Image 1: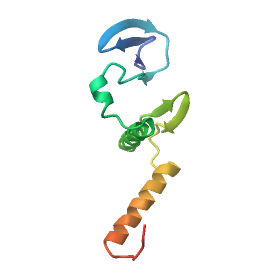
Image 2 (image 1 turned 90 degrees about the horizontal axis):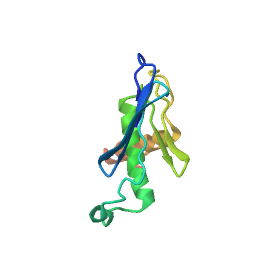
Image 3 (image 1 turned 180 degrees about the vertical axis):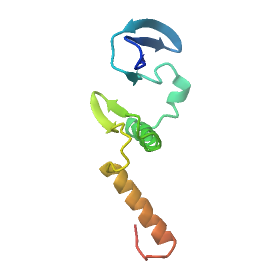
Image 4 (image 1 turned 45 degrees about the vertical axis):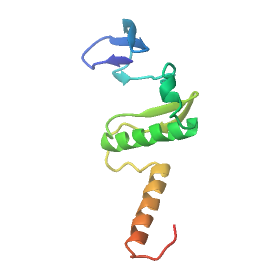
Length: 125
């Protein structure tokens, strides 16, 4: 994790491995907090048997970040997998920002399901 408060000239960087503090130091960095997670379940064989495919687990994390981004539009969220950005929010307080296309599609499908279940519109979704 790297973090710097806007009133500070330098930030702090910490590394944690297997739940233990590995390193802590001051560092020049931009204002804000960046948290990077790698090999989250590397030492938990009991959990491994309950893990789904990488795509399913990534989908769960992406869904969680989508919800967090909707709850906190002022915070920038980014999910990268193997160096490729798979989710990104802008971190803006502007309320008129358009919804990401994937989220808009999910919301459209959910609205159609609700309309269909309420027998307002006889559609098969």
